[in-house]
Amino acid sequence: MNKFILAATAGILITGTAFADGHRSAAPEGAKAYIISPADGATVSNPVTIVFGLEGMGVAPAGTEVDNTGHHHLLINTDPASLDMDSGLPATDQIVHFGGGQTQVTKELPAGTHTLQLLLGDWGHVPHNPPVMSEMITITVN
Image (cartoon, rainbow, N blue to C red; front, side):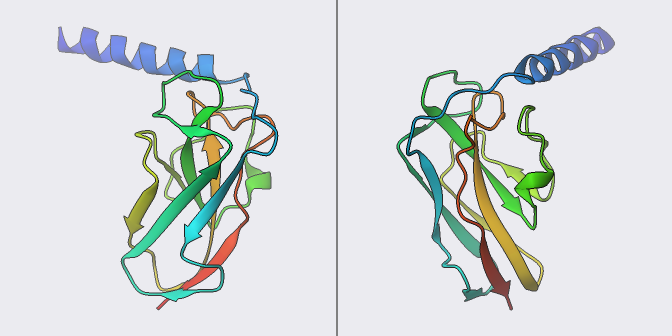
């Protein structure tokens, strides 16, 4: 019975991911994500609190299919040009998902220089069209 439940759950997850791929929800004109803090060029200590901002759209948990909403993804040391904007964003140490609709995070980062950028995803973790993305900032963790 447990194997059946595990197989069914895996099938639902795979189907959900496949369904999310290939669509792009429209972003309203002028929508933008931004990092409220820390400031670009800041030197900070661990743990680092990163506060997210969003203008022209609303924040909703992943799975909530409502026009003009999405949830944040934090790109750490990641060039957005390397991402497939037509597919759901993968969850990695460098692409942190906030599918619960969170608008900030307190996180340990290794000492050194890091780039941070926000990228909004729709209900299926797919970036909007056009992408709603913050400017990339650089911080130094001491």
